[in-house]
Every structure is written in structure tokens, then in C-alpha cells.
Amino acid sequence: MATRLLKALVVLFVAGAGFCPVVAHAYELDAQFDCRARPHAFIEQLVNNQYIDPNPMRVEANSVNVFRPTHGSDITAFGFRVYAVLGYENDDEMFRKGPGEALADPLYGVVLSAPREAVESRVREAGSNATVRMVIPLLLTAVVCSPS
Image (cartoon, rainbow, N blue to C red; front, side, top):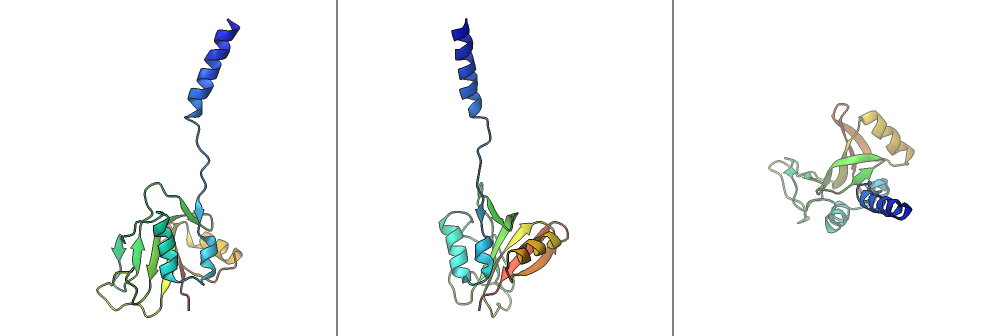
């Protein structure tokens, strides 16, 4: 009887282990916001590691390319989930041109699912001089670097 009970518990334990959440580690982009990287290198690493779709989901009139994270990827910046990745560098085949006047300076960044004040606070705590802009009040905030 005790052996049957022990075997039943072992079977339940092993079967139940498959339903336990696996500890996942997000890919953190904080270090790239020292604003020293080139947009090509920033986007290329994310594409090569399959964190973002290589084809932009949108190209703005000023040629800023907006890339969508791939299904199942977990990308964060400053502790917030990345909603989209931005990039543009003039005369770089990686980036599509928009219908308007292209930006003169290169840029890269992310759109985060968080309010601007919270993002701004964490960006400054990290020592980054990236630009923080509200995209949608209380929902989405952009963090952008313009390397020289």
C-alpha cells in the first residue's frame, strides 16, 4: 500500500512538473542605451538573435523604421517590456526610406509599455542620456539614442 502511494505521488509530481512555469530571463537592452552604438549594430544584433522581425512593421515618413518583437521574445529596457524597436541610419541598406524627408542624424531606440515618468526615472538612474518621449499617455514611452 505504501509503495503504491509513493509511486502515485511520484507520478503526480513528475506530471505536474510540466505545468510549473519555467523561469524565463528577459533580454535586457539597458547597456545599449549608453548611446554609443550605431543603429545598424543595435538592430542587427536583435535581428540575428531573432528578438525582432527583420522587416519593419512600419516606416515613418522621416524614415524611422519600427520593428516588432518576434512572437515569444522577451525584450526589456530599464525593467519595462519592449513594445517596438526603432532605428534609422542614412545610406544604410538595412533601413527602408520613408516618403518624406529622411532624418539627417542616425537614431535607435525602443518603445516601452510604461508611463513616461517611470521610464525617465529609470533611464536617469542608469546614467543614460537617452531622450525619453511620451508616445501614448500612461501607456507607451519611447527611449531614443542619437549617436554622433
